Amino acid sequence: MTLALVAGAFLFDPVFAAPLVYEGFGYTPQETLGFDDNGGTGFSTPWRGSPGLILPVESDMTVAAGSLAPSASPFPSTNEHADAGDGASAFRTMAVSLEMNANEDYFVSFLFYMQPNTLSLLGGVSFFPNGNEEVFFGWSAQSSQGFAVSKLGGLSSGDSYSGLETHFLVGKIQARPGNMTGPGLSDQLFLEAYAPGETVPANEPATYSVVGQTTENIFLAEHPQHRLQRFHGAR
Amino acid sequence: MELDEIRVGETWADVARVPESSAGVLLGFAAMAAMKRRPCKVTA
Image (cartoon, rainbow over all chains, first blue to last red; front, side):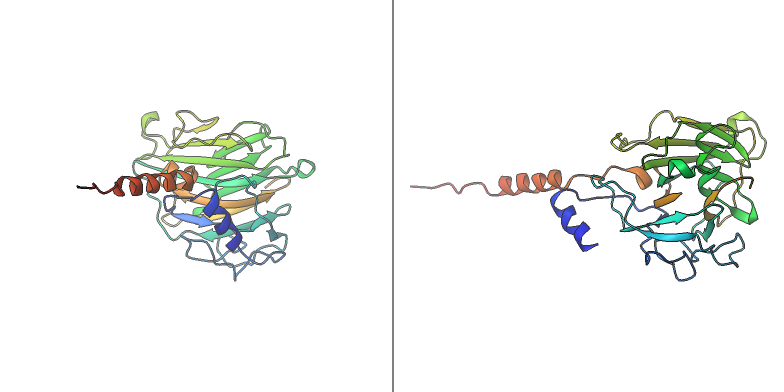
C-alpha cells in the first residue's frame, strides 16, 4: 500500500468519483473469503456463501496474493484479489439502495481473468436480490462463448475472450419505471470489455459490444446482494 | 476465475474514469506559482 502511494506520487494522482460500492479484496491471502472479510466500502455485511447470508463461503473461494491490475494501470488497487474455484460463489449485501423502478442508470466495473484451460460455464458478478439472480455481468458459455450480460436468465453474449489476459469489464444497468409497459420503458443491460493496453474512455461510450434488451422491467430489491460466482456445468 | 477491483456507481466516471495525471496537476500548480511570482519593479 505504501509502495503504491509512493509510485502514485511520481506517476499518477488517481482521482475517482466516489462509487457506491468498492471491493478490492485487501484481505489475508490464502484464506477463504469469509465472515471476517468486511472491507471495501458500501456494504452492510461481510462475504457469505448463500443468498440468505447464512452459509459460509465455500473453501475454494479464496483471497489470492497480487493485484489483477496490470503494472502500468492507472487504477488504484490493493495487493490481493478473489480467486473462485468451480461452483464457488460469494454474496455480500450492498448498503445502498438501487432505484430500479425509476429512470436511473447504474454502472459496475471489475477486473476479470479466467485461465483458458479452466474456462467454466459462467463467471462474473451478479445482482442477486430476494434469492434470485436478476442481473449478471461477466463471461459465459451457456449459449455462445463470450462476455455476456443476463437479466432474469435471458443471456446476451458478445466479445470473445481467449482467457489469456485480464480484462477490465464495465457494465451498465439502464433502469426504467413501470413493468411490461413497452419497449420504450424497458430495462437494458450493457457491457464493454477492455483488454490490456486498450484505452478505457474517460466518458461513457455511445455504444457497447454487448447489449441485453428486454421488454420486461427488471426490479431489484432495495438492497441487492453482490454475488461473485463461477460455475462449471449446469447451475 | 479471478476477480478484482469491483465498483458500483451511478456514473461511468464512478467506475471507469481514467485518473488525472499528477504531472498535469503539478504543472498547473507550477504555472499558478509562476504567475504569482512576478519580478518586483525596480524604481530609480
